Length: 70
Image (tube, rainbow, N blue to C red; front, side):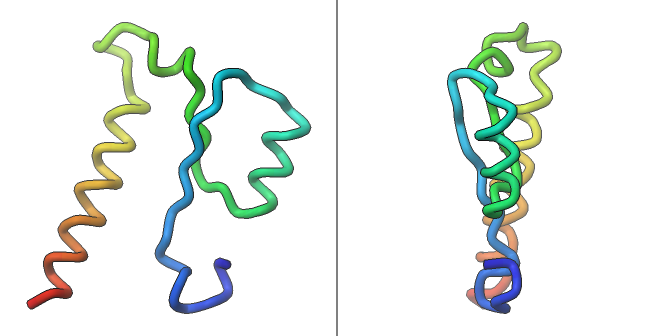
């Protein structure tokens, strides 16, 4: 998907309950950009960088979408 110019700006995020080295590496090869695990979301809010990253990606995508609509 990354070679197609239409899809090159799409980021694929995946939520998983647990880590699996073999499956996760295969998913990365298939094009998954970010893997979020359930234990990452259960950390205290002070150290929840994963949610901050996801929110930043969504905010940036929304801004680009709105900027392109004008």
